[in-house]
Length: 209
Image (tube, rainbow, N blue to C red):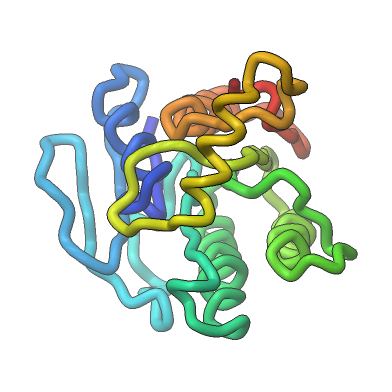
């Protein structure tokens, strides 16, 4: 199986990449990225500008796409930039992959994704899911984690505090409200890509604990 992975340098994406490279069911991984990735015999990692993706690149054709692209409002600096990274880039990848015959797309979305939400973050995630549903993939999966736990390159004090609280309360919280480990999310993304169930599938946060 040939896998196209975007967002491989991020927290969840790096776990997906590690798992995919170690998985005998995956014969090749193409991971277009803004910066070079470590070399591996199964990995092709073209450096790309997501503002100007190479529309005719042969590597858009794959058996499945996993999208783990994403940023934060702090990193983005504005709503416009956040929307571009969390909505426009994943949608552009989807359209190019689908045009080249890739039948399956798996998105790392978010709990609360809702195109009608008053919360900007949830609304952007929901609008992306809605737009992806119109792309024509034979198999489309939305993995919707809650708060993601794992070592990050940047320090996020608000998320770190919330993570500590939720971990402490974990035993008494409903499964859907517990912290989701990045590696659990990565496993769900990869297994969804391999299974490629027909139609639209949703993997909720309570399945990621």
